[in-house]
Image (cartoon, rainbow, N blue to C red; front, side):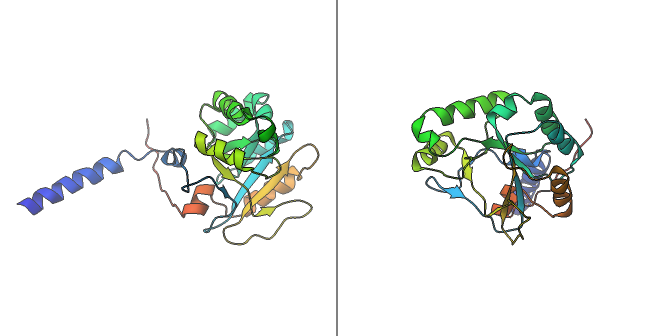
Amino acid sequence: MKTKALLVGLLIFLLFILFNVPKNFSSLLPVFQLTEKPTVISKGSYGNTITVDLTFGKEDIEQFVTDIQAPYPHFFIGIEWIERSEEIIEVMKEKNIPISLLGKNGATYIESPTLFEQEVERFEQAIGERPLWFRSMDYEFPIELQKKAWEQKVNLLSSSKYWSDKVPSLEKGDILTIPLHQEERVDIQQLKKFVQSKEIITIEQNIFGLKVKTKTYPE
């Protein structure tokens, strides 16, 4: 009798979990800290992740964002671009394109001790949630910045490969950065073809090997 009651209880619990799984993958991943002390992640283990550093452009970016289909690259965007590009940001949010915060050069956060908190607050106001990931413009993360991010529960991401003059070959676990700045910029059409030709996974999938299947139920 006890065994039967235990099985019934377990079944009820599993049904509760099944019907309360969030519809969007991102909602399964609240802000987290991956280690027991501040650190910078630069590579995963399970596949390839494409990240885009964005500080400049409008019409070409809008077309690119409109055209691309999932799985999406992960955008790291400067706060000034975010604040002056509300319409494009809305398209990205509607398509669930992942957006994180691209900051200034690492040394700037030593010179301006409150800058990181200010950028995180501006990001939250513009996007509606705090950034899960942060990257400095020059990929320098001084210990002062690492501590600030740790306090704010924001994870720091570098990358293992960088697209400069040519497309780099990717190995398992690589996190690729693609620049879209005024002074350094990959051709948008080439970028679109590259993204569509690759099997890419999210940062979290690359680090943890997560595979999440969800259903979309009619309202």
